Structure formats: structure tokens, C-alpha cells
Length: 305
Image (tube, rainbow, N blue to C red; front, side, top):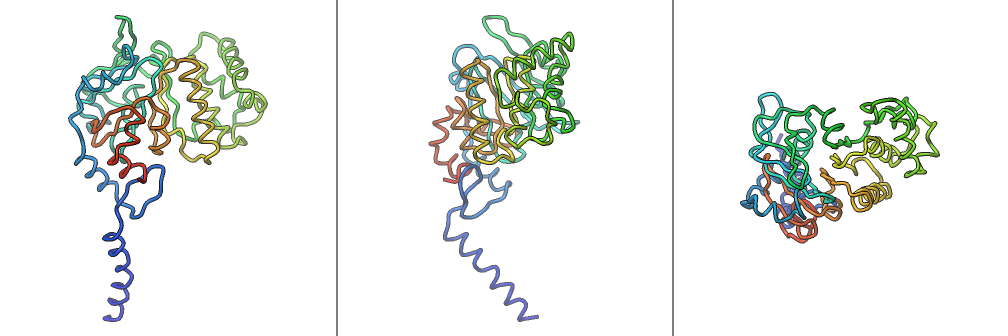
């Protein structure tokens, strides 16, 4: 028994020494010396959280907000995840949400699109004095009437359907199947890579092609605002670059407003005009994407720096 205890102590010792000798880092785009738990990341983010005011959020927006959230309380069932959350993003701007697991990032996208329970607060869209309250609209109404599309995480395509049929499904709220097919053709014109695979079942596509199909299906309804959940998840680096190039074109070439959740914090902040660091259902830090990249505390916890 004594020998067993000595063996266990020897196995534990290197870990203790490493924790003392090397700095602890978070997760994101870089390497780590010592992996720390989600709970510890949450605690450390809370310790550096700022008093983010509405005035500061407004200052990050160019012009009027395309989408605005005021004092939102939302969650699932009786569980409140978001606590009096405020958010602003301007027309043709991009916003990236980062933070530890459980911070409420995807819950924000769900609340905007109508996938969860909203207890209080308001979500509005529009500009030029014509703002519209969409807080309690159904997901179908938000897609068709408010121009908001949700690009889900990986594996949301219909694998046994062809690429073409998947795109038709993106137009299920259009007035007729002919309208959906015409919209699909416009997508094929934009992305020849998909056009060459139109008769292939989605399950044979590469990871990058599947993500392109997921994005393209959301474009069939010609939305103005894109909610993008973890665009890089499960992709090889070359496909990650391709996806972000597509999103860049949609924002800067087609004038889409993009709100993104991205676990690869470095990639997301490099892409986005605005970044929010979330913790425990609240905005802990907000700033321009490139400035958050240079923030040493954000770097330590999320960028591997």
C-alpha cells in the first residue's frame, strides 16, 4: 500500500510543478501550457469584467443598429441564461460572440431567432426611424418577415437529399416551389462549386462543401441578417479559411449583417468588426474586434497568448 501511494505521488508531482512553473492559459486559436477548466476560465473572465454601458455598445455601431437587444432575459423553461443583456450591431457590420462554455453565446442566437423562452426585454430590427419589435415572433416569421436566417452548427444538412433538394428546402417559406427553385439557381450561379455537385447527395460532400451548402441554404430566402453558429467547428484549416472568405463576401459584397458565435476566438475576432466577451449570461467586455485581439487578458484566456 505504501509503495502504491508513492507511485501515485510521483505521477502527480510533474503536474504540480508545471502548474507552478508555467502560466495557465485558456482556449481559442493557440496552444496551452496548462489546460484550465471552464469554471476557472469563467471565474477569471468575471474578475476582469468591465461595466459595459449602452453608450459604449452604441459607439461601436456605425449608423443605426440593424439589430438591437435591450435588457433581454431569456433561457429555457424556467432557467434564465441571459440576464438583462444588451446588444447592438449595425447594418453591414459583423459581431463575434466569444466566451467560455455556458456563457450564453448560442442562447443569444436562439433568442434572436425564437428558439427559446424570453422572459423580458426587447429585440428590434430596422433603421431610419422604422424599427420593428420582433421579440416574440416565431422563427418562420423572423425568417420570412424580418429577414433573419440562422446557420446552424455542423451536420444540419439533409444527408440523403441532393444538394439541389437541400437548397429547395431553404425556400420552404416561399410562395411557390418555383420561387424556391429560382432562388436556388441564383445560389448555384454564385457558387459554381455547389452547382457541379447539384445532383449529388449531401452525405458525399466534403466538410467544407457541407458548410458551404449550409450557408447557401440560408441565403435562399435572401435574408438581411445572418446568425452563424460555430462556422469553423469540425473543419480542416483550409476549409475554415474558405468559410470565412465566404462570410467576408456576404458582409462586404452583399451587405449582410452577421452575428456569429465562434469558439476559435482568434479567427472570429480577426473577422468581426465588433467583439463581445460573454460570461454567465452577461457582456463582460465589448470592443472592436482587432482591439480585443490585442487585449492581453482576452489573449491569455481565449487566444492562447
